[in-house]
Image 1 (cartoon, protein in one colour):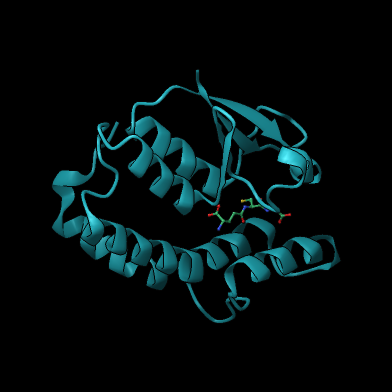
Image 2: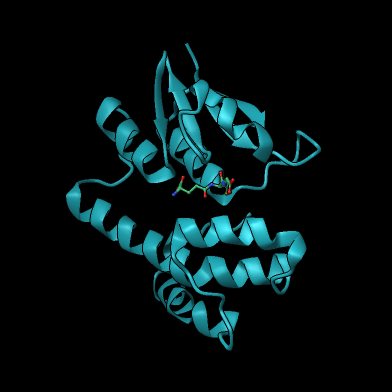
Length: 165
Ligand SMILES: N[C@@H](CCC(=O)N[C@@H](CS)C(=O)NCC(=O)O)C(=O)O
């Protein structure tokens, strides 16, 4: 039976814009697991599993619900240990945690600023939930090029791992 992934959508159910849900999708694909997505708008997240999680992604694996993209990755790694590994051990898991923390605290606030602009009444609720989730201050005076410099250097040094299509 295919795993179900509850996936954030916009008014257009085909528009899936959540980077946290993308991570869960990539983890499922890397594990070569069959999954189906269920589009969920912000206002319906509370209906998943009778209020199981305030956020998506959530997966339903034969009745077992798991929330949070990183917890989903750990669950898949442990439950489907015979499949291609996501972390290749505890060292890889710790490195992935570091990258996640860096992306959440440095990259996401800057990207949010580019996408939604300066805080305003229209995004106030969204920004509050963002800060609650990530404890990140509004990124005043920081620029995207300086924030991505470590990534740029790493990719330059290890370009063999970058696949272009
Ligand atoms: N730490 C969580 C964060 C998930 C998260 O923030 N998801 C957003 C969508 S990108 C969400 O569901 N927000 C609901 C809300 O703000 O009401 C994870 O990695 O899954």
